[in-house]
Image (tube, rainbow, N blue to C red; front, side, top):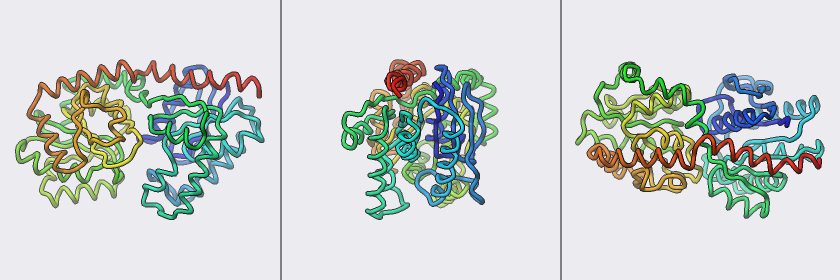
Length: 401
């Protein structure tokens, strides 16, 4: 099947939504489909089997695209829409597969081009807009709700990536076929070679030295974006209480944009914990297994939201103890059997860290259970199988177009 995939984001960058696009495209390519991926001019080229990347024209002076809604999205999406139309006029496709707000492109274009539409639903865009700092205008939020409804009703198949999204589909497009596909691919296929390197002791020690982390220091690791909803402010505020009991502990927060890193560094200095905090910035996704192998405790202190953090699947697979906030975003995947769940406050995060640092047996049990869960429910084979099932649902409709 020849698929036109449309992704309104910087591709590729090491963060959640681009990972979802990366692994969906890769899985479809492995299944033998031919994918033309249309995306922004911003991003790094990557080599994927049976996938060709086609970029929209650049927007002058736009070099980065922030996570979530932004003014830059308007010109970027306009140029992406034009590129999508150009691709549809130039080539024949069997379906159009869209992500995020490009789902509306699929709603608009699928009928005139007589193509079935597959919508990859990362989250509820209306909810994301309402919870962001971009706008509180009820009319704009209502318009986005209409966009989401129109997108869902246009789709022949909807891929959802966490359970909460089923409620949105049921409310706005009842009866539409959905396939739940957790974003597990990042934990496996691409990580195999990196994992072999990650467990090389000498290499891990060299990585610690390069980051300024003492060789035997207990290490608590966070990976991901530095957006406010990630709870990193509360995490840093928890550090003084942890260091009072475990002065040799170190925290490593991987990711963030320069201004976000500067804000976290300023907060750490104001609390007097800057010597125990390491902020190396964004690193490639190939390095993440190595960072996790080096760590003792993995952190997900998210303070709000309902979408499941992509990092959780690689955390589960890493075989390390997990400390996470007890909010729906995390608990859709994590249970007390596989992670220590605490309130998203600095005091609770501090107590949780101290509990894990002081109880190696608990850490070992949680890590063992987490890895077993990853193998049983969130394997790469399951990801491939569920992706194939979504397109099997589409296949009879394709033949009828």
